[in-house]
Image (cartoon, rainbow, N blue to C red; front, side, top):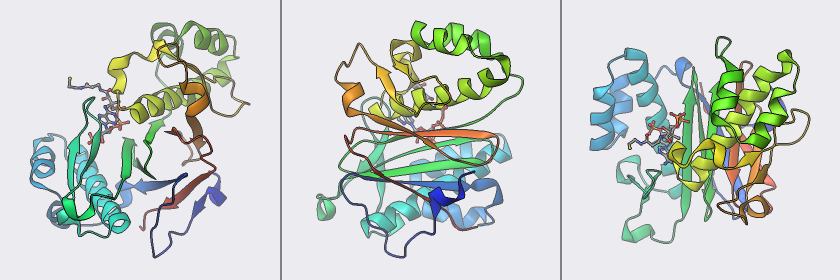
Length: 250
Ligand SMILES: CC(C)(COP(=O)(O)OP(=O)(O)OC[C@H]1O[C@@H](n2cnc3c(N)ncnc32)[C@H](O)[C@@H]1OP(=O)(O)O)[C@@H](O)C(=O)NCCC(=O)NCCS
C-alpha cells in the first residue's frame, strides 16, 4: 500500500471545489458496538441493517453506514441524526438537503469488499468509488470475454497469466467506479465503454460512445488500498488534482 497517499485526517473537514476525499474504513477492525452504530442511522437504514441474514453482512453495513453518517455530519456541520439520505433516479444514494443547508452540495459514494469499505466525497460534482478484493478462484478470462468491451478484451487477454488477474480486478474497479459516478450502476452494461487496461499506464476512461464527451471530462484514478485489494475513484472534475486519502480511526 502507498502509505503516503493516506494522510492523518484534519480536525476541520472541509471540501473545496475540485477536490475529492476518499476514506478507507477497515470495518472488520471497528469495535464500535452495534447499538452505537444503530443509533446513528435513520429509520430506513436501520431496517435495512436488520434484514441482513449473515452477521458479518449486518456488521459491515452498520459500521460502514454509521461511519458514512459521521463523516457527512462533519463535512456538513449537521448532527448525524439530521442527515437524510435518499436516492437519485438511477439508485445512487444522495443527500436530501433540508432548507437550512440547501447551499451544501456534498456528493458521496461508497463501496465495500472483504474487510474494507471506501467512502468518497466531493463538492459540487459527482463522485464514484469502487473497491474489489482480488479473488484467486475467479475465472477472469471468462469474465473478460463476457462483460468487457472488445477493446478491453484485446488489451487484457494478451497479458501474461500472472498479470491478467490483477489487471482484470483493476479494470473492473475502474469501470464500476465510473458507472457509480454516473449513478447508473451496473444496469448500464460494463461492455458499453472502455477504460485503460494496461497495468503500467494510469487509470483513465478511454471511450464511451454513449457519452462521447465523457473521456475529456471524467477522471478515474487508482486508489492504493491494502494488499489484496484494488480500488478506483471517478469524478467529472476536469482537474481533479486534489484527490486526498484519509484513514478512519481504528
Ligand atoms: C449499485 C452497484 C453498482 C453496487 O455494486 P456492488 O459491487 O454490489 O457494491 P459496492 O460495494 O461497490 O457498492 C455498493 C454501494 O453503492 C451505492 N450505490 C447503490 N446504487 C448505486 C448507483 N446506482 N450508483 C452509484 N452508487 C450506488 C450504495 O451506497 C451501495 O452501498 P449500500 O448497499 O451499503 O448502501 C450494483 O449493485 C448495481 O449496479 N446494481 C444494479 C442496480 C440494481 O441491481 N438494482 C436493484 C433494483 S432493480
